Structure formats: C-alpha cells, structure tokens
Length: 346
Ligand SMILES: Cc1ncc(COP(=O)(O)O)c(C=O)c1O
Image (tube, rainbow, N blue to C red; front, top):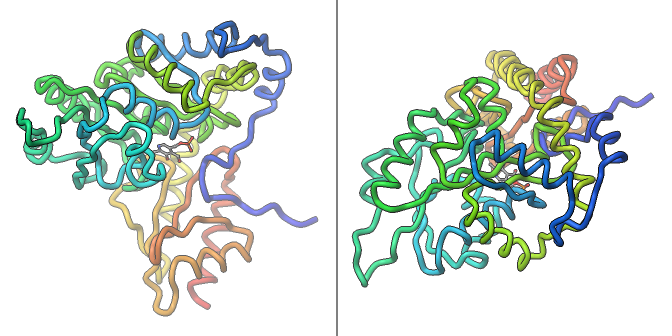
C-alpha cells in the first residue's frame, strides 16, 4: 500500500474530526441570513463570552473577517498601520484597498512587534494635508516570523497607545489558539487589548470552514452588513458552526502537541548541513527554513521532498515552510528529517 504523504504545507489542510462530522449530521440549523440558525448563534455566543466581547459573527474565512473588520472600523481614505509582513497586508490579494478603501502605512516589526517609537511617530497629526490615522493591526501568532507569540504586555501597550490617540486595534488572531496553548493567558485578556479580533477555525482547530469575528455590538452590526455585501452571508451555516463548537472542546487542547512537534522538528533539523532556521525561536507550529546549500533553492528542495512524500511550501527563492498540525505524527517528523538530509546531500 502506498504511504500517504506527510503534509507540512499548512495547518489549513486539516480535516474535520469524526466528532465534528457527527456534530454536523445532528446540528440544528436555520437560515442564518434571516438570523435563525441556533447553532451559529450558539457558536457566536460561546466565542464572544470566551473573549469577553459583546458579540461575534461567523465568517466564511479569515481573509473576509480581516477585511470586514477594517471596513467596519474605518472610512475610505483613512490610514491604517500594519506590519509590513502581516498576512492582512501581504497575503490578502491587496483586498484592503478595494474592500475598505484605506491607505496603508506599513512598518517593519521584530517578530510581529512594532517599535513603540516608530509606531508613535507613524500616527499622523491632525492635518487636512494628511490622511487620518484610523487603526492599528496586530497578528497573533505572527506568521511571517515563524509563528512567534506576541506577548500580552506588548499588546496591552499597543492598545493603550492606540486609545490614547483615538485609534482602534484589530487583531488577526488566526492562530491565537496556538499561542494561547503556550502562554496560558486568559482568552478574555487577549480580548481586552483589542477592539476586534478574528480567530480561524479552519487551521489547527481542524474545522472545514470558517472564522469568528468579535467586537462590540455596533461593530458586529456594521460587520454583518459588510459581510452581506461581500456575499458572505451563509444560510444553513450551523452545519459548519457545529464543528467550531466541537473544536473548543476537542481540538483546541491538542494544539500544544502540534507546537511541541514543531520544536522537535526544528531541533532535529538544526544539525543538517545546507539549511538553517530562518527564525529566532519556535514558539508555535510554524518553522521557516532557509536553504543555504549551494546549487539548491527552496522550490527545488520543495519538489525533491515532495518526491519523498514530504509536502512543504517554498516561499520565494530561499524559504521553505513546515507547519505542524494534528495529522502530523512523530513518524512524519522522522520521515521529514531523513528526507531533508538525503535531498540536501544529493
Ligand atoms: C495570519 C493569518 N491571517 C489570516 C489568514 C486568512 O485566513 P483564510 O485562509 O481563512 O482566509 C491566514 C491564512 O492562512 C493567516 O495565516
């Protein structure tokens, strides 16, 4: 029998658990666009309560949730401050300029953290000649620096600075649950230091589809309207929301294991010639490697590993990404390490 490839490309490849599939079959549903799907309502209530927010909205994707949040918080022409490596800026198809019509001010960060000096300097003075600064975006965990955890005291300071200047903060918390599995910080504390946040259900939490957007009641009301004009209203969405309720109980507690496996993978790769870690720490489930072997680049290594049954993602010429999730076993880590050794030696 042919062995299944070990798929390290992303935690978005995770499939629903048997419990999720059962929950889908028995979910009570209604027409959520008409506001009467009880399972969606329950999921939204659960998340809003967990994060100490007034309200929540079930969204088809993290991208739509992020875009909606910016559109709901701003008016066209306002400037928003984002990390130059943030998903919302780099990987959402430039959507913010269309969906929200905002002006983007990008700042370099260290592991997802702006320097407070540059953050403060980038907030515009009131002037008819300049755009008005409207909001700041943070990301937890920070994808581009390798799933780095953004500390809660830093988030508190950003929130304080933003509010001092009358700005709002949105957090892209696509993988916040992976970070929380390490920090143990109360979810409500994460909720306290942002005006809105988005959680992905379809990554390490293993749901097939969906994200949750949270904030105060009027923000969620505006977001519901924006979701409608984006075509993101879903009818019997309770079948999907049912998986999110299972995730809180079943897959959320598994994320610490995914994080630990990623650290184990990083440790094993450290000794291999021709590759080095392209990040300072492995906090959660993401590992970026830099290919340094002469004559090889990341797409070549990606293709050679795929031939050995190890799926990874090349990002540009040098970077290769590994993401651990609940389908990656210890045996898969061993396979990945030995495949990498043989590809780099060849
Ligand atoms: C940090 C981060 N934010 C947002 C998203 C967007 O989520 P989705 O793929 O559900 O649109 C992703 C997806 O990979 C992500 O990694």
